[in-house]
Image (cartoon, rainbow, N blue to C red):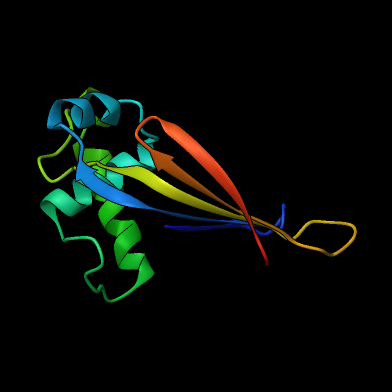
Length: 123
């Protein structure tokens, strides 16, 4: 996973293994999601899968409006298609470009069991 924070001029490159989160945890955490995200999950469940094509943005807005009218989203349980993944980081590379001296700071953090080691890298 690559994460770039332009306002901080910092990049994180995280590598490791990904696993699915237990459905019970996903269902429980779904209740804390923002309403807009819940509406999209309902759309994916009953209308169309994520990343499928649609004729227009207005059609998407119309679908969401219909869902808002038909469902009491705060009282619903998470749709069956909702899933979660967890990244178990084994390496984290940090590149900090926000240095006054313009000598970038680059470090590699590596996990060995429960311990992390840090190594400085040439940027």
